[in-house]
Length: 590
Ligand SMILES: C[S@@+](CC[C@H](N)C(=O)[O-])C[C@H]1O[C@@H](n2cnc3c(N)ncnc32)[C@H](O)[C@@H]1O
Image (tube, rainbow, N blue to C red):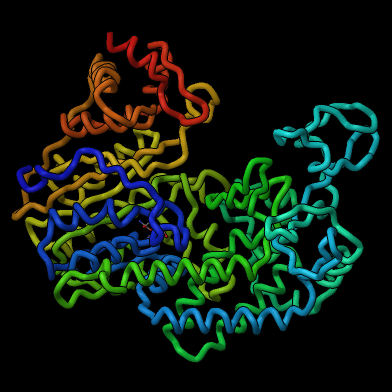
């Protein structure tokens, strides 16, 4: 316990830094959240392993503190992103080559992005085009262009404008998507939105008939994939990744990709490929329009909003190259994030966490890792979108995930448990005796927490963690109590366990007995008035932490229980922020 004494209990790591934001990956852990752990449990020059490494943030955190990192994951996309970050390139070369590939691609697509500015008829490149779904009324068969019937706040109509029958999205069939407005630079330099002219329609039609569409790198999203059913892809015919791009953007991306891949310098090419995959979600129909401001792409699903953007690929890429230059300078420039002394290095293998054959027994000084959280996110399904371009796919068969649909639903939890268990056994094998492993984990179900608890114990780690931290990544708010989307957890725990110096007797956790659960929840609610972050996930994290410290079995502690207790105690949740309302907090404390 002494070793971890000075680690903070709550780690707040907002996801706003330029490195973090340069390339998205599902559930990244920010570098700043990892560094205190590496510094606590290792000395400079020692080695850190992460075998669910994703985009490689552990590697960057290790390098920046002068430690070496041995990363691995099954994800081809994760490896591509991590190696992209780690590639040190000269900023001026990157800028020159970035501009050059843009100009090659611009030439190759001709006038596909051109439009006429309405105010003076000047030819300009489109900044973005807004597209809308069309719905067909089941009663009178009239088409309804969704965008055109939204009110000022972006709310849909209640009835069919033709026959006044009720408008229910789910019951109406979908017609063709149609472009509804174009945004260009106005004469005064400010962006202006204008209606489409004949000129725009011609450019869109031309792209639709372009032969290059057959060359777009694509992957089928097959029926056995969880996201096939979860995103309702069959119903809307979106079962191939290339269908997520408008014809025009698909051609622009293809030409850009060809130009990038022809760049001679390997390191510059790698960084430009990294910047390319970083723009794919926004370059696709997944970039959601909203009446207030663009809503980015939902990166956990293949959802397309009824109004979406077709954003100019060249603008997106040009901005991303700038972001890659800033991140590169922060990582490798002077002063640099990687300014620690020593010969630290990072490697990244494609390997399943239950078979770390590239690592020798007792060779690693510390493990920091962030496994998938049960059935929340299907990394390999979502990565297909990028990997189609890379031409290398994740070996999804060994993915640690709990399937909830299709054939793989049977025995899914047991398979997940076995994989996690074997992975922790591998961690135990490669760690030097007496050394530590920190595991980031977040889930709203006590059953999954219980499973992690047993897997750590059975792998041979000391059963009481050395330290339990709450990791607040400042994520989306929990709409919780009022909206019904109650099972979203926005707070993770970081459990740090130790490999004993010699084999020890197993010390099993105690079952919760009557009253224990309510006492734990009550205490966490009472403590709320003394902590800053006040949302249901935070209360749940505090309940779990107490239970872990008291060595209780976690299986019966669910986020749902905390929500019910909060509701019974008269709390409500601010629907905008997800936070518990201050007035109620004060009442409860009184
Ligand atoms: C929560 S993410 C890790 C994200 C990472 N912390 C980051 O900063 O990007 C979990 C990772 O586990 C990987 N994964 C799933 N099953 C795996 C397995 N059997 N072996 C290794 N990695 C696996 C996924 O590909 C995903 O990258």
